[in-house]
Image (cartoon, rainbow, N blue to C red; front, side, top):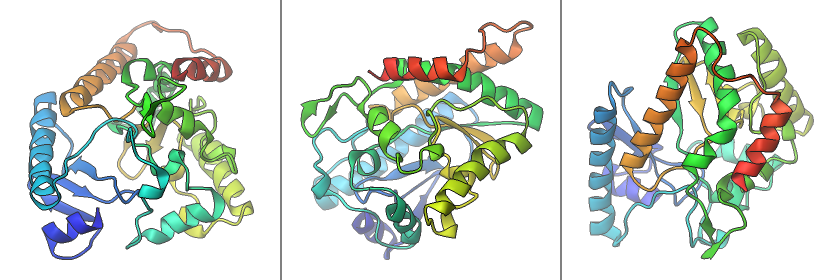
Length: 284
């Protein structure tokens, strides 16, 4: 990935802006993050912008390396020795994680989620959105799983990415929790019971301050991103193509919109323990 960035930009940086999109590094050296420069105003804008990004980046990859982009939640043939951790700027963040966790495993080096950010306008709306998404996120892998194969073989799970994801931070389990997020009543409670808790556990494990008290360190399937006033859904696999990403985002937005507009709850709020067990069954 660093070679591609240098080819396009002339030197190695974390991200490069090209028109309406930006591409750049991820933790894994073989993974390219592609994101819009501003929130999409419509599904059509999502489709057109990201399709253009894929075409432009594939043209560069094909011309220079005889390669192309590959979607899905896991690379289906990659062996761990074939990749590495990003070694340039911001590597201290990845080094901080490596001091606590074993990042030489599929759960770090060979997973990629489709991260959908949904904006909120107030604390009340954010908490409602968070809890509604917590109540349904256990079942989203049923329509988003795209990682049946890794190391060239069918895995044991329908969603192997999430199987590895559930285990990749076992040294400090409060960082990921049960993947299905706990219900909360306020931002204050969320900061106290989620962010401060895993930050305290990380600090006790000897973590570097650069990963303490950060909302993005939270690895649950849905998190609150205070810096961008959005809910970030992380439980879904990256899809096989842009149109599948668009369809999945439309489905989730429509589902959430319907749940929020209902005068009476359309779904009971199941206990987190029940949702966590259902989540494991769906992933399986």
